[in-house]
Length: 268
Image 1 (cartoon, rainbow, N blue to C red):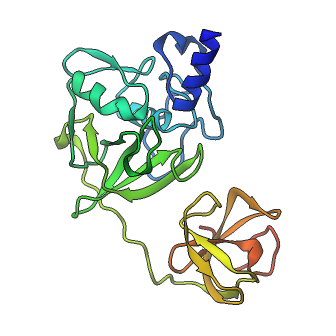
Image 2: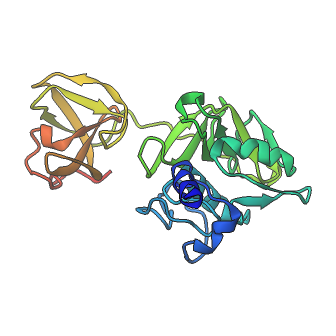
């Protein structure tokens, strides 16, 4: 019972002890980083042990895998640092303390290739904390991160953050500069439709994304592109992106097709 209880607790926190690594998933090693793309080889799986000792679908599994593409390899959720010591990293909120103990730099300055860390309760992180991979940094010190299990439950997203701290697994001199892209506020193509009910427009294509407010029934919206989502609303998985970058469920608009892309509108 104690072992079973530990396994259940490990699944909810996204890490596992080194002794359970024998259960790990098998997968070919990635050939190179695809920053900004959900190329995580275990996407769609949740709670399975990956080769680095973390549970798939969680932030730690994704970030450890992304770091492995730069030659930073965890074993049994543990990592040996520059000072030759080894520590288990475990939950996301523990990563900064473990990193310092093995000789990595932790500070408040983001850099491409660094890992952003939130302790439990910081910035909306749950009690076990959270980690995300920094893919770009702007001149104001904001980082665009990619991550798992934040805005999308057990799934991928990106956002711009000012995290409380960053772990630098690579020397700054080897990190290429990045820039947070500015959203295009004037898309080359948009088409007018109406919403059929008073409708939430959201930060992303799914009901789990935060609402940005309500669009009154009958209002005209301008759609720039469409995408499919795992968030299905009344039988339709199509979501529409508006000119301000927010999303609405297509089923509540006057686009001409049900659960299908509108001819002439590009895919997001």
